[in-house]
Image (tube, rainbow, N blue to C red; front, top):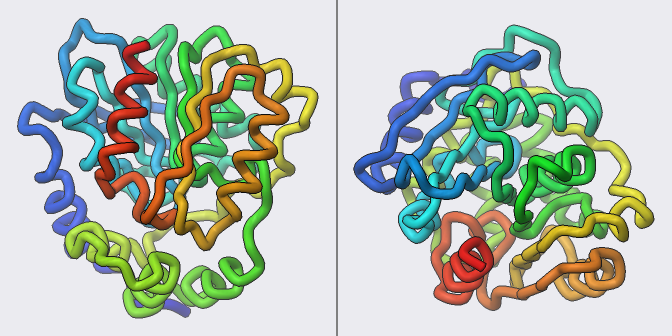
Length: 285
């Protein structure tokens, strides 16, 4: 078994990262068939909506702090994922087991937030959920952006899975830190963000991410909406250039950018100028 979960330590670490968000932020909860969704939001009430989905495991919606302030012309809604670590996560319904379940969960979140349509973005596992939802509910997604999405266009590198295995099978702060430091290639990581990842080790009620097949090529070819694909140039998760090549051959309206000098897990909580500029231009286009 892994380390016993310290809920107070997790909440303190979560709130410390949330302190990096704009001061006018607020949090709301939304009921779904898969339990209560916890949503951090900020920005003008009458601005176009943007929904952000984090990676799985211990990523949490707080990880979007480096991008939240830069999206000042939008109404940002960052959502903790179902059956993953989160500040207000309550799993009272069933666990999501299929891509269709994830799409149903996100539909319920959008309904609860009163959003008929939105720009939608996700990182890693959140990118997988965002893409699956866009394929199933195209009328609700105005624009789609994906930050190094997992299992969308290519599989994981074997070395990544091998290094991830100890922290998945027996999670502990030490194993989580060792894995993230390996994936980042020794590049500096925000210590508050890293502490939150460590504190999420052993989070109760966390289930395995939905590991369904990648989207069918014919479905991706029919996804006629603007898509921005931002890939981590130093990712050890997948080959960014292979992902870019495959996405360009499948998505009819995709813009792809390989962001240099950043790893997969650090991408949303880092702030390279290229990432912020591309994302802002895309959402305001």
